[in-house]
Image 1 (spheres, rainbow over the protein chains, first blue to last red):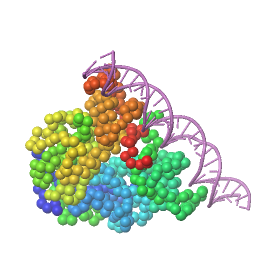
Image 2 (image 1 turned 60 degrees about the vertical axis):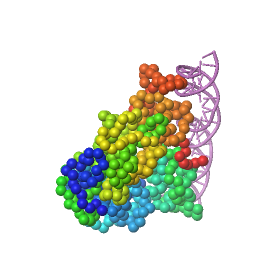
Image 3 (image 1 turned 90 degrees about the vertical axis):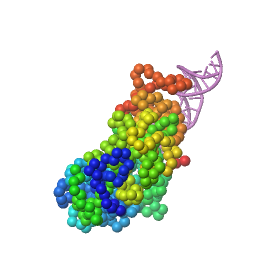
Image 4 (image 1 turned 180 degrees about the vertical axis):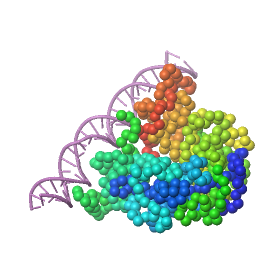
Amino acid sequence: MSASVDHASNGNSPDGYDKYAYEPFAVTVDLAVLTIRNGALQVLLVERGQEPYAGHWALPGGFVLPHESAETAARRELAEETGLEDVSELHLEQLRTYSEPDRDPRMRVVTVAFAALLPHPPEPHGGGDAKQARWLPYDTAGPLAFDHDRILADAHERVGAKLEYSCLATSFCPPEFTLGELQQVYETVWGTALDRPNFRRKVLGTPGFVEPVPGAARLTGGRGKPAALYRAGEATTLHPPLLRPTPEGRP
Amino acid sequence: MSASVDHASNGNSPDGYDKYAYEPFAVTVDLAVLTIRNGALQVLLVERGQEPYAGHWALPGGFVLPHESAETAARRELAEETGLEDVSELHLEQLRTYSEPDRDPRMRVVTVAFAALLPHPPEPHGGGDAKQARWLPYDTAGPLAFDHDRILADAHERVGAKLEYSCLATSFCPPEFTLGELQQVYETVWGTALDRPNFRRKVLGTPGFVEPVPGAARLTGGRGKPAALYRAGEATTLHPPLLRPTPEGRP
DNA sequence: AAGACCAATAGTCACTACGACTATAAAGAG
DNA sequence: CTCTTTATAGTCGTAGTGACTATTGGTCTT
């Protein structure tokens, strides 16, 4: 693989093509693992044990191995951190790459950030290694290590935007869910309340967004009329989109 | 900066935190520089002079220098390739990072791809170095080197999508433009014809998208009634979006 | 057991945005 | 002058949606 590497003291290649003279960077992945627990948006964080930022919370992540793509590494890290045995079905989305030269005070680390969406997170997660891992509410996820605050904010923004024009919301839900639960996903991520009948009309009026569970199955969450159960449908995009109430724009 | 680096034979760090043991990768940027010339979407390509893919066309790009972020490197490369003296105003958008282990047959190269939008491209571009650089139509941009076909397709898709909900289209236009020119941007990128009065109504009805040039300036492109000139406005997003005609969805 | 409460579901009404048009205005070409 | 070409103005019908009210079918309380 990456056999012998000549460190050019100056990585600049005159014509931009001599790919044998380069400055090696460390490449990592960082994961913003989001879920909804107790009606709140929560994020999986790990507590750092070493300097820098010892004692601070950080996004889980790790190095990309020589034989891995960033996506593969992200999925491996996700499995390690959550303790789930099958993460192949989970939605994993590449956010962007963060490459500020001083983002890691020790050395040059370029990180590829991903957002992952979990339906019902395992309470006793953690890969079994020494470091502490916990679900924390998004709002109170204090100052994180490195530039992870920025990454987390970007993940939130990306997921919020994708809810508008994709069927991604079902990724936060268990295999069978009620429309109320689906609506709570939108309300929790966007931080706004939605009109229930209108939400229902929109979702059911979009072919392929959800499909009813045939057996007149019903779920009892507590009080109130039992709700019908639905599964995620075939569709992946929403046309026309389900726009959040005036994030900006006209009065 | 990136002082001494110990190559771990196994880059895997047990707890994902030992950032001093890592496998170094080369990090590059690749640019999909798009423009509209003669009513067609065109892309800036360079001809490779070395193996692999000698003689093939490829996206311009190069290494990220030790003191640079990927964005800085991309802007530097953009300036070098286009020969423009001021690229600080140009829209540069990070697409995603491509990190398949075998994407470069020689060694491990991770590339951060960007899309750049140019208004009126300089005919005699090229950074002055040996390699050939040319504008080629997007449609006939044959098989490119490495995974650049994929990157280019992703750039096209991203730009097409962003036209729907952002004011990005003005980035393809000179400082002052007619609504007909702006419409041509949409039609060229999307590959579909739009109704002119409706397009006009939508653009003018969106506050801050464009603002008329006060002096009753007009431009003569040839025949027909002269068109009023507009400048890009303050707004950056479009609410509600300007959706392209049924890319999929309901009949 | 009767009534209070609660959430899901059904349906109404008005307004906005948009697709599909037709009509008019202002230039150059012949 | 007339024809062509392009910009601009305006009309009409409808899908989609925000803001509601009403009904249904359960649990919880007393």
